[in-house]
Length: 433
Image (cartoon, rainbow, N blue to C red; front, side):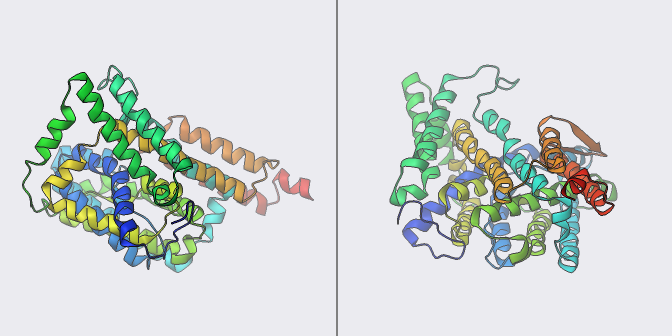
């Protein structure tokens, strides 16, 4: 294939391209997606299974028009942690089911009343920075995963982490610019393999063998094993602790659909429609709760892969989903993928998160936002500071911060400015007159 050729959403992909492109998407999401079940103390196999099933359901419900990979949601960590500590994981599953069901109801309301309200509550001057924050607020996470930040768990920055990180990031950055033909669509996969190889070489040179030990342990896993399915239990108290997360995941979903639409050049809020994608996202979360998995959400890492490779085909996303399901049943495969070093995942995320941030800036540019108007300048400024300042708003057991808090602040300000316009109070209107 030609360099920089776009593979559109509905395009068929030859088998020789489909497999490596699908592997690339699965690797991109894997590190973050398996972290959530580790935090909850459950086997990640059930999560890999539901990520694949949820993604296939998403593709089906959105009629194959919205490329998105569903991975583990981080929005539920704090409230679910409280529920697990008090009543156990089964009651957290009941909360996941309730949130997913409520999200499906919200999708039906949007189907009834439309999406025109989005232009009022999140105009381009607000939506641009909100979308940018999806990537920018994750920048620290990428550096932490790579082992480049001094923390309690990582008091000293290891030279090996720096080397593997730089190799991975360097191959991804320069590969995206220099690779041609087939290689131009798999720079992420090549970067991951290069980073993995550099980690093995570094360990060999320094006499360490942590990665090799992990590889050996991976091949000692049972060849086939069923994911650990379990059923939910319901408690009103547990459900009420988790239910407010709907505010977080709804804002996140809208932002992801808008940024994906900008990348592929289509308005996904209209076709297939926000009601379909939001329903699919929450239906997957509800099913996850019923079978013992964690809530799912559209993944920024995979959005970044599409932005970088210009490959948007849902067949590739579907292929990654099938691979994820296979890994959930094949012990050595899922264990082997977990041996990918943190600096490799961090190096890839470093670039992908930045590309999501750039997509938010693109919204501002494409919509020709006029910063000569006070309302636009104010909206963008306040949203960026609200999202990056570290300020948090606590509602019960749910903490709103980062992109979600910025979205709430942006919505409130946008609604107020809309009312001011209707009342002809805005000085921007008087200047135009």
